[in-house]
Length: 208
Image 1 (cartoon, one colour):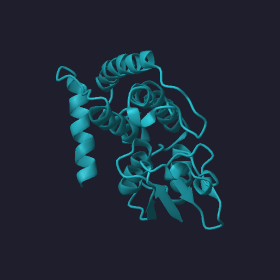
Image 2: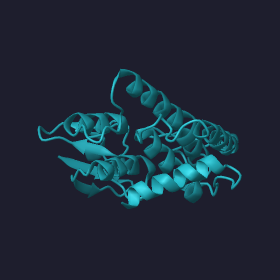
Image 3: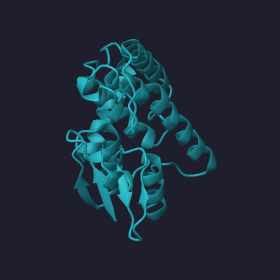
Image 4: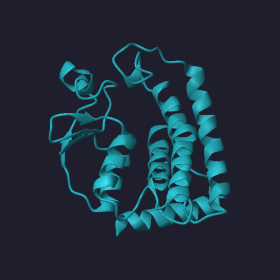
């Protein structure tokens, strides 16, 4: 297998952190997003959305969506169970992972892609031209602020986002927060104490 990735980009990091916590080693190929390598015909044959990450399989086919890649690898390497164990826990983790993506990562992407000059005419993924809308950049920043407050409330009730076990929901939230700090210059307020506790715990897990 081969992972097509881009260091520093949020969705590839959602996979590389997953691999790190699983202890899985896969050959990685850097895709140069700045030069537009992901928009080439060759790469579009691997990923119809022209996005990274992409997992190239031994039979020549590809998985090109982050959760599809991680679920595939979870089936091959079930421990530690980052999508949960048991029907109820898996459902909770799926629910919160979707919530983090919808209210967190998509909000940051909305703010970033509708403001950055590098995404002019590419406010959405893919090769079709999509104009930037400045109002969406403003809305994305507002949405991210709401996400942080809601996430802090969730973490007042539980150790990890999906429940009592670290999961892909926590990986995605960490990536989202780090991406926002770099891309749109927004960080959690110090008053969000439960979020700060969780963030430190996540950082400790990654540094092990």
